Length: 361
Ligand SMILES: *Cc1c(COP(=O)(O)O)cnc(C)c1O
Image (cartoon, rainbow, N blue to C red):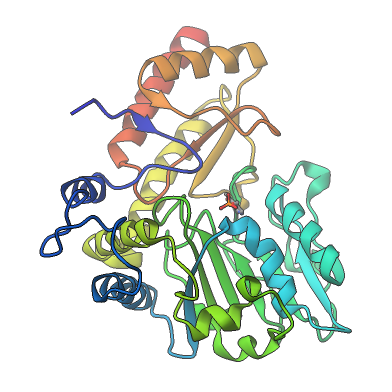
């Protein structure tokens, strides 16, 4: 097998090796079926079994109550920026958006096309390097919903509490930290995530929605944009992203095998803790997020000069640490260390960083 590098990409991101190996083993013919998952009907009992098990495992893994529906959709998290307001922002109401980064910016832009929107808690004045405090948040009484971005993939910040939204349904873009730790779904109206960071390959998007919110979806909506239609049809209104759902199912089995979300959270805390400790050890590295807002998934940092950053990225790539360049909008470095990123890769990166510091500090 070709040697695998350490993949720090922000997404699509590293998948668990056992998942890739099983997908490879079953690629040409699923056991007992004699065809690949890409070749079978989505109406076949085989695929019904695959999507049914994925849903059941997802429900078990996160303890999702029966009063929530799980949808497997397409269009990425970005289509949810439109579907959320199209379905939930009903006539005469306002949706609140908490402005914590570039993805929140993109989400609110789509909501504005649909209806009345109120932005709150923006931390743009400090380049989104922190999550706002409760005192900085102002919600609209009777808001249609409040939208938050659980983990700000580009800026390296993450919510470590939930905003006090009262009775308003909380809608969370959890694309980059879903199932990296336990989640109390009952506190949300809707959670959505593109799969390609923590759940599987790109092409499938998970939406977890409280059943009663489906009543808001107007029959006049375009069919494919209507949550109620997807729920009624068990995510099989049209051809679903079958291969993506299959691999997502393998990732869920892997997560369960790891000991579930509490066990994964412990590992994630340990991985991020080591890396932040290294960044804080001397003044050489410059972590960009405020300590209390630091993401356990995307660790963002800079060096004193852009030349030094260029050298670090070049040398780290050559040494087998791929994808450490920060997002083009913010520069610097970003180590994305999602669920499937191996702890050994963090340890090896730290050793590499020590050596780089010794040579350049
Ligand atoms: C990656 C990402 C998106 C965009 O996801 P797509 O699936 O590419 O549409 C949206 N929100 C967050 C927080 C992300 O990390």
